[in-house]
Length: 114
Image 1: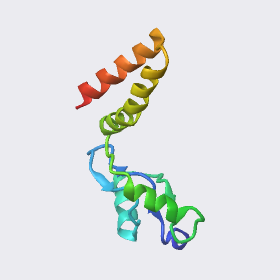
Image 2: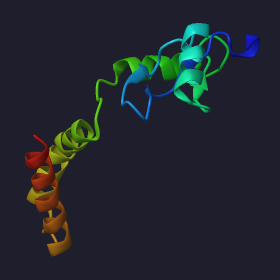
Image 3: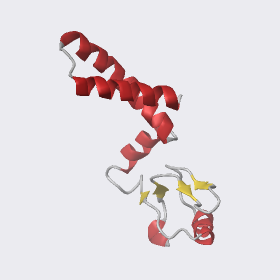
């Protein structure tokens, strides 16, 4: 257990039976948290070490900035980032029917997710 001192979770750790979030991403994993994982039957957790890993601090800062918490929010954010590029692209070049379908599908996903 000493070799896991200073470990942080890469992603939210969820009890699959209850749906309870036992630990959010980018939070330190204490001995109490390890005990809660064991009680919930969680046998694997992806971890990183901000103080020991070369990229640990960068990963931690990136996770702090990421406010997206669901796949629905992720789809909306992707659409928002693509939309200006799609508009610029459509002004410069003719759009193929496949690209039109992609744009329509993106719009439908973003609207239905909202």
